[in-house]
Length: 56
Image 1 (spheres, helix red, strand yellow):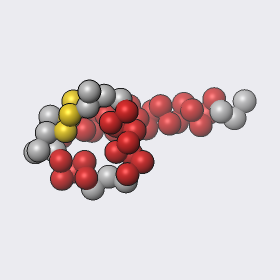
Image 2 (tube, rainbow, N blue to C red):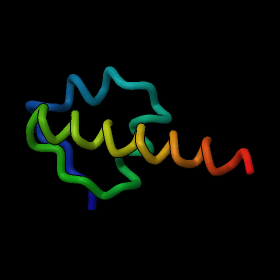
Image 3 (cartoon, rainbow, N blue to C red):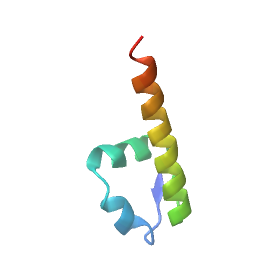
Image 4 (cartoon, rainbow, N blue to C red):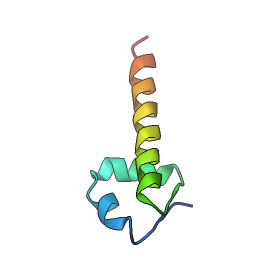
């Protein structure tokens, strides 16, 4: 189950809704800014792979 710490909530809320949904779908616990940055990197990597492999 996903969790967003109150300390990280303002940064999370500033993200586009579709990005928020992607993060929550991962079921990640966001307790620090580093957690949020890592989650965004994983999400971006997945999206790049989907776009790359979707072209074949």
